[in-house]
Image (cartoon, rainbow, N blue to C red; front, top):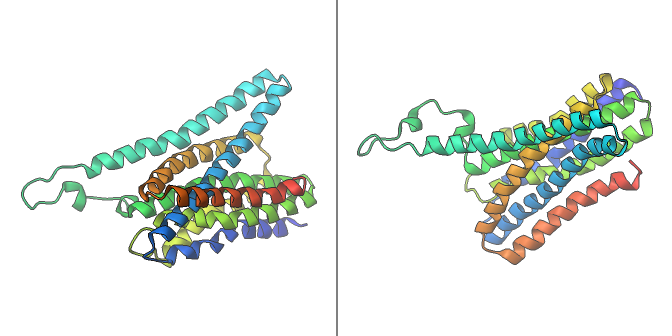
Length: 277
């Protein structure tokens, strides 16, 4: 398989995320349907959290088991710092946004300064779209690590493994689109096709980028960093989604559909396990 073919297939594996994104345009007055979409998205994100953490921890544990203490300490530090950066950067940014929105009115009938000030594009988004963007970012970091695995397998001459990874990650990414659009299911205004397209590029595009870099440069340390940052950011999003699901006050429905999302994630991952990858 040539470099060009590997890159094309890596791009396809990332772009399968677009399969689930059109559901973001679907609108229904059914509270049960909105609760189901949100909780399926939560289940998928819970799986992704487990997936990225296990990928990030694996190199650390391998050095520990081999008693390579220096390498273990370095990789453990990368894992801890990356996880902290992914989680706490979103915690502090969310706190900063809430503080800005809490600006008091200047006077009777007067709008807060920040309503007419220089608001960023992110601040202008609805809560559902902001959460969708955070999910897409976390998934993108995760998919960059997957792209590195594809590129490094091809560069090492393990073509059968590279093909299995491309097929498995491509199938796996189809469920991630549902995870992105889930938080927008309860909003009255449908997201534009342009917004959904941007979410797809943010979430799926890094698979191709990782494949490009993995072909040219093998770096297990870089993989650990990206998986750790992705794990921290996805954990933050999962916490937010649990809060969204709780507001529907449908514990049985939320429980079953969250389980469905979790099993969808594991089901696509088992394709890789069955192939010995």
